[in-house]
Every structure is written in structure tokens, then in C-alpha cells.
Length: 421
Image (tube, rainbow, N blue to C red; front, side):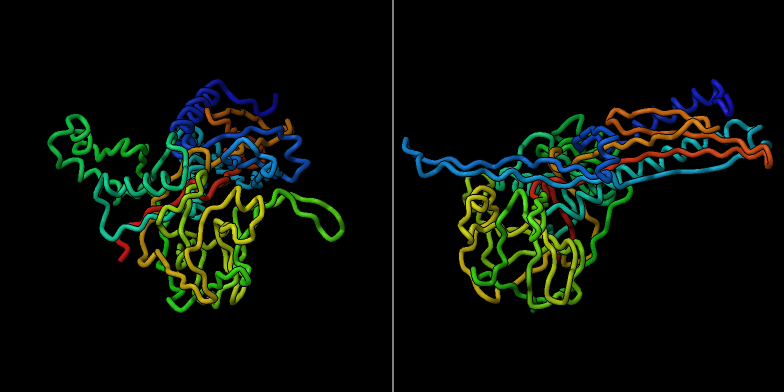
């Protein structure tokens, strides 16, 4: 067969795939959903994935007044990441077999970094929980705040993860290293800047943490929280167009109207006066202000936020089912308070069910190109191709992967930022 891979190259690819799997640290902390690739191609690489139901309970034997429809929410997940590392080697360069291996190793590291970065970005930019810390990272107390905000809002306690920037991670390791009564954990912290599992979270050290600039929207921006203002949200599974066609609804975001959006940007975190978070199951107020994130600015007075303000002000069944906040007082000029008050690294934390990876697959034809495929433990496929050009004596190589990542549950994920005055 033309351009068939030699045994040495097959061994090299197997080593690349093994190392690639080891590099996928953050992707192992996400759920994976495998799809039929033919169906995905016909659906423009988009699939709607269900969110967890939240169900109400009622007191008493007579439930005749409580039989109602339950709204099943879902979110679109797109196989939208197409990452490739191409390179060439000519006949002279191929005399040194190590060059081929080094380039393959570099390609592996780059693609693994792309996948980890995608997981990091959807957790950092779309997670709505926000933990603000005034001082530098110190240790247990910081992580305990992430645990608390999740517990208060009913996030499952298992499979929780926290990814920290190198400075913040090492700050926590320093806190452990000076303790004298924790044995092996102290030794690891001192020898290897190792934090490990803290307060129910598996922790990871990032060598690339996304920075979030300080919010510049200013203190004068307000929002109408009166019922008449219409800035509350009623979740719905499907919507019907004027032509009668039905389609699914993505309930992770809401467009709200504010007095101004000047200098507001994607990622900004904020609270609304007198808007308190509730436990997702019991609907009891946590006594803590609900945190929101800006997804995008649309006009001079409208912006898209996550999560939507489901305050049950409309009194519908779906609002009662998915209520996430409660107003203790409403006003036509409720203050918006920005939380990211200084530029700093974001440290995302999430429950595993919030982040989902959808592996994709390339259908590469056998058209004079040598092809090898491999699949990681997460189901992410890596394709290696090689083609030789007799005119130039140059061999082309490329390593490719196709996947999608989505934050299915913004209220089960968020960020912690340090040094926020």
C-alpha cells in the first residue's frame, strides 16, 4: 500500500497515544457522551443533552391539586473543536529518527493542552458560582468556601474538582508545608508543592490559568426587579415559532435589561440587591446573594447572563420547579454589584456532571495517505496521517482530534478569585 507506516512509526504512534492519554488531566474530570457520528453529521454536529430534573414534593395525602406537567430542560452540545498539528520532514531530516519522535511528542502535548484548555474555558467563563477572596490563596479556608456555596445550593457532593493557577496552588501548598501534624501530606507539600484532595475537592495545578480583568461597568448600573420589569425567567423545554414549528430551548442564559452596559464584558461576575440564592431542591434561601456571570453584551442596555433569574415571580409550574433565587425586596433600580474587582487568575471549580465532552471522529478516506487511529480512555480519537511527495522528497505529517465541550449546568460550576478588594 502506498505510504504505509513502518513498524517503527506504529510504535511511535502508540507511544504518542499513551502519552496523550496521560496529558488529558482536566478532561478526566468531565463526563463523556459518545454519539453516532453519522447522525451528528446530519445534525450539523449538534446534539441536545438533558439536564437533571428538579422535582417538587408536597405535604399531605390529597395531591389532587398538585398533578402538573414537569419541564425537562436540555442544552445543545456542539462538536466544534477541530484541532490539528501539521509538520513536514524532508528526506535528509528523516535520517535522524529522533526528530520525528520529538515532533510527535510536541504535537501530542499541544493537542492535549487544547482539550484541557477547552474544559478550563467552559468552566471558567460559563460557571455562575463565584467565590471572592480578599487575600492571597492560603489553604483549607479558601476551598471550604467553594464547598459551602455548592452545598448551600444543592450541588451533588461527589466528584468535585478545583483547578488552581500555579501561584494560587503553590500558595495553598505553602500553607500545608508549614503544618507539623499532617504527616505525609505535609511532606508532599514541602517536597513537591502538592495539595491533593482538600475539603471534598480533587485539586489540579494549572500552568495556564485564564485571567479575568476587573469589572469596569461601574456602580451606577441598576436593574428593574419588579414583576412589571420583566427581568425574571420561566424555563421551558420547547418554544413554538409563529409559523407553528417547535424547537428546543437552551435555558442556561437569559437576556436582561439594565440601565447601561458601558464597559461591561464577558465573564464579569455580579450580584443583584436583595436577590438571594436558594437551595435547588428545598427552595430555602441560603441567606447569600445569588451570583451571576455576563455571557455577552448585546446592546447599550441589554446583556445575556447566566444563570437566568428564576425567582418564581411569574408563578408558573416551571419556575417553581427550577427556582434558583428569591427577592426579599424589589425595586425598579436594584443595584448591581460587581465581584471581580481586580484583575486576577480564575480558579475554576465544578461538579463532574456539569462539564461534558462529546468526542468526534474524522472519516478520512484511504486516498494515498497512510492513516492510523487511536482512542483515549475518554473516547477522544486521535488520527495520525502521513503522505510523501516524490517531487520534493518531503513527507507531510499531521495529528488531529475532533471534539466538543459544554458546560451543561452553570450552577454546578464557577470560579474562585483571590486578591479581590
